[in-house]
Image (tube, rainbow, N blue to C red):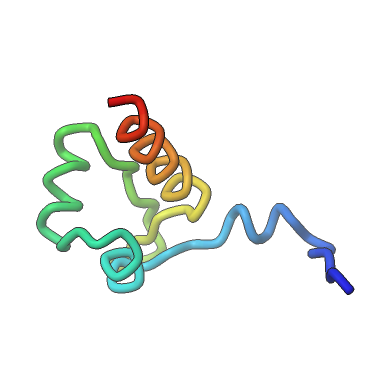
Length: 73
């Protein structure tokens, strides 16, 4: 039996912090920030005075774009 998410927009708006992000995409912290500066990685959103995170939907879109690009080359 498949369970459906009663709040699909909440999943799309989930925030990913830096450490889980680096583990998920396989890039180092410095490389993520380098790509942000170059405009090739989504910008983080502020969560507090010294805390940022990335919207999961933005990270998913970035991963999908990279996968599509690698398949077309």
